[in-house]
Image (tube, rainbow, N blue to C red):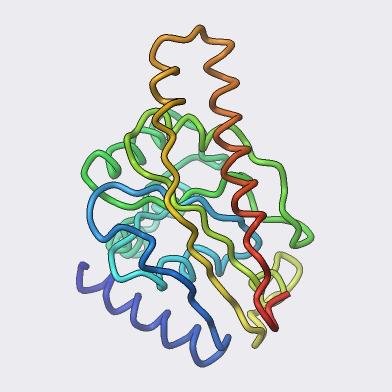
Length: 214
């Protein structure tokens, strides 16, 4: 970890422990080396640091490119391994940045739903995560977070002292669909992207809630 990243990582761990009484389940399921895609549900600004703080290796995050316009804050975001993407994260430059991090052996957090949930419920997955999975060889770790919507959702100004939980699932291998994608026609390729996204969200949804994290 870069020094700034390590300091922020340690501070986030202390914050989640003291203010949110966090619980972390199965962080060992995230490989300690090599490329990894983490695919998680998204209900709060707390989700990325919560997921990243639960594992002992650096994580690459996505951040809107407009946030990098400030020299000081842009420098800080780069120290946190943030990848600049456009507003919906679907731009070619953002995809290249994500794939570059994966090809370099890094971990990238993606949110198949594409945006934060408005009511805390899981939303349908978008196909973008499937595109990223197909264009990489990385295993995909499905992750479910609980309690972050109650702690800090888009309708509240500041985080509240609610318990938050992060559960890391078993890595998923999409080798068969990756092999098919190499030769299939474009209409089928688009279906594969969506199939992967739907499978990931189905596994995320199967994670059972934790006590006091609703």
